[in-house]
Amino acid sequence: MTKMKKVLAVGLASVLAVSFAACSKGAGDADADNKTDAAAAKTGYSVISQIQEVKDTTLTIDSVAAAVLVDADGKIIDCKIDEAQTKPDLATNNGDVADLRTKLEKKEDYGMKGVSPIGKEWYEQVAAFEEFAKGKTADEITAAVGDDGYPSNADLKAGCTIAVVDIAKAVSNAVTNAQDLGASANDTLKLAVTTEKYYESNETNLQYDSNYAVVTLSADGKITSCIIDASQAKCTIADSKFTVAEGTFASKKELKDDYGMKGISPIGKEWYEQADAFEKWAVGKTAAEITAGVGDDGYASDADLKAGCTIIVSSIAKTVANAATV
Image 1: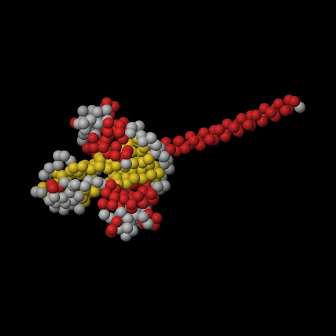
Image 2 (image 1 turned 90 degrees about the vertical axis):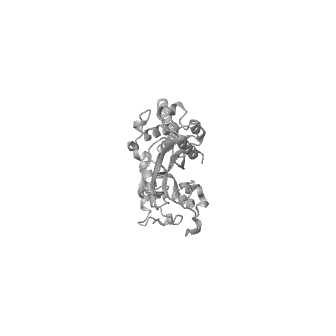
Image 3 (image 1 turned 180 degrees about the vertical axis):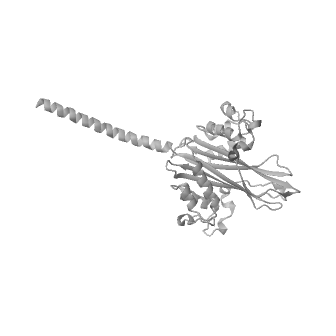
């Protein structure tokens, strides 16, 4: 009888030990699963740039940029959209554009609310698109747009009536391009776009350059993933009239080796390779640390950054810092 009691006691203790371990493991695994899910988030970006409406002395440079945070199933966790629209006029100040803010930055100044059928400004309608995109895949984004380029999905149309064909394409491409760069699902996604007139613009070429930065931020404001890109809108001129053809143009990252920097680079690296070095360097840093890594001459002053990036980075750093603080 005593022996039987000992056997039962040992058995019961074993069951309790297993149960306790299971309970403890369950709680730990739940936390671990949450961390794993968060760590699996991918960061994506895309831009669609075009030169449109070319006339003798006027044209429109338009760049739609999209950033996404994507889960393991390819569904959008968060989405950010902005658009740079630059309209130079050769007959006015040699093509200088005074206001180079994006549509998002202009907010009410963009002036869409008065002509919108739903009384919403551009930034408000884009916010509705961003909210609609959450939880959707790339295919579901493109399926929400009709053949006319406007929203065909009823839920999307309720808050967004603008032409969204390029926006949807940029978002869809961003999802397709998304990579595991260190972001977590609970990080904050940011997008910034800055545009400036190229300092060597002249009577035969008017050029506007745009820089794009996508970052994800941890709760303490440090960058967990970073993507940068840039585009150059080269608008040729002859006899004080634009001669550039309408159409899309590739960003520096899209051009890759065709950009042609490797042969003149002191470290033998193409622009996209040096951009990759900048992106990796930026991870773990704050906005202030990004700007501190650039010297007064516009080049990298930080030794680690200089090792892989010898291009002028002042505009890039400014855009990344803007993304990390907006």
